[in-house]
Amino acid sequence: MVEIATSLLSFEKENYLPTIYNLEVAGTNYFHIDVMDGKFVKNNTVDRMRKYTETIQQVSAIPIEVHLMVEDVEAYSKAYIDMGVKNITFHIESCKSEKQISKLISTIKQNNVQVGLTLKPNTEIEKIYPYLPYLHRVLIMSVEPGAGGQEWKEESIEKIRKLNAFAYENGYDIDIEVDGGINDKTAPKVIEAGANILVVGSYMFHTENYKETMKKLKKSDF
Image: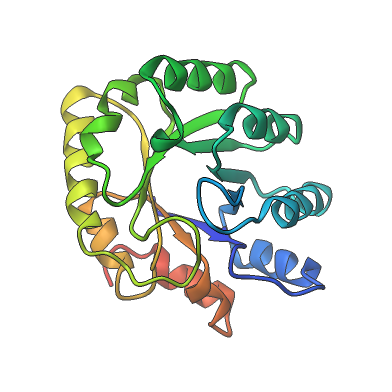
C-alpha cells in the first residue's frame, strides 16, 4: 500500500493549524518534518520544525516522521525522541564511521522509535546495504537535500529498483520512501520502481483539494 508523508518544509503560513487539520482529514499517513541545521545543508529550519512538531503533537494523532539534515545527529535525534515522534531518519553522510552509524541506529531503536537511513543523490545506494537488517525504512532523495520545490532527478529510479531488488532477495522487510519532486507525473515512476512512501510538499500545497491529490498519488495504476 502506498502511503503519503506530507512535508511541511514548503509551508510557512503564520496560522498553520487549519492546514494541519485539513491534511489529517484528507488522509495523510505522516507529517514529514525536515530538520536542517544550516551546517549539513545551507538552510536552517530548526526552530520552525520544532514548533510544527510540538503543535502537531498537541492537535493530531497522525504519526510524525523526522528527516534530520544535520551534523550532530545524536543531539537532534535525542530531542525528537523526547518529543515522541514515530520515525527518525538521518543521513549516512552525517557520520564519520560505520561504528557511529550503528550506534545511532541502536540508540534510536532502543527508545522505541523507528529508524531510517537516507543518502544524497550522488551517494551510491550500496552504502546502505550493511544496515538494512536493522532499519525500518530507507529514504531515497530524488533532489539535493536542503530546499523544497526542486526538480526531480530521474537517476533516483535506478536506486529504488536496486534497493527494492536487494531487499527482496535478502528478505529485508523495509519501507522505501522517496523525497523530492513528487507529483502526479513522477509518483507512478517511483511506485513502479518499488517505493511505498511518497514525501509530498510543494505539489500538495499547490493543489486546491488535498484529499483528491492524496487519492491520486496513492494509486499505483495512473
